[in-house]
Image 1 (cartoon, rainbow, N blue to C red):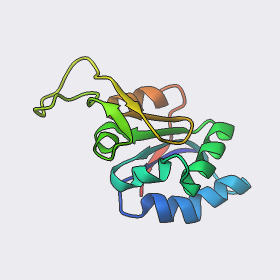
Image 2 (image 1 turned 135 degrees about the vertical axis):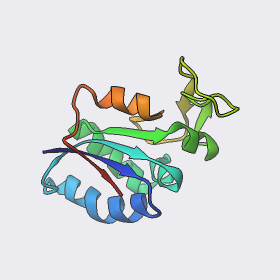
Image 3 (image 1 turned 45 degrees about the vertical axis):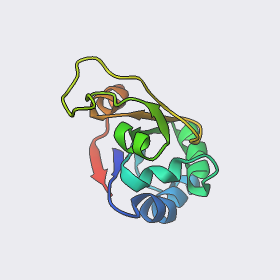
Length: 133
């Protein structure tokens, strides 16, 4: 079975990922194939360059071909990206062409985007289940 994780709840990245999922992935005993992880709010901070959880996760993600993506608005708000929102205008209206938003000061392999970007990125290797933590 293939899964994607969406980290939305407080401590989803630091506790649930860092203390449960990541050690299992590192040891090869997690039990499913993880194809992607999408980070919201303060969970994005585990992806900062130098963060112990993020650095470990980047190695596992590269080895196991796991997508690591941060919400564009969350990353911009936390100074982990620069540019503009991908799929909405500053006034909150939608846009048809994506804005340019690039990550900064994060671990290797992390991308930034919104749901259309997540769906596109996972379309070649879609999960069977999406789990929100």
